[in-house]
Length: 199
Image (cartoon, rainbow, N blue to C red; front, side, top):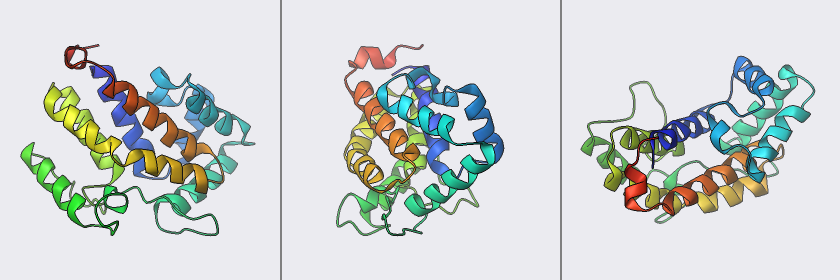
């Protein structure tokens, strides 16, 4: 994985960390390339996400619709279409939130001198935090640790992406989750030497 992969991981983390601000959505609509995901946005899932953004009438409507989708999918609001918890513990172990995967991720963060930022209300096994750690490992050129975390993510992100596809009424986050899954698979297919190559 390269420095470009670290940048893309960080961009994915931002998309799944919190609802998008109106200014972010306006910029994404104007840019047309999904911001930091531009290097991977030309595949089918990336095109679907871009089509959703372009198809909304204006930035105000886009903000309202996408933020409602984010809350329903990821913040437990649920609704008739269900939700897609962005926590590893929802998809691994006994399926109960904040169990063993949460403790494992807290320990993994601590191993690298990191932790969940003060004031952050998310647990260490949140998708955005795992992706942020992956970005940090790639930036620090720690290919062995990065490969292990990549394998860990691939243990649950595919099911998360499937749930997003089933529950996302806008299609935007479903497309981003599918794009993330494809990106992780592409990175897993690299050889160890390719993972160490800077971009």
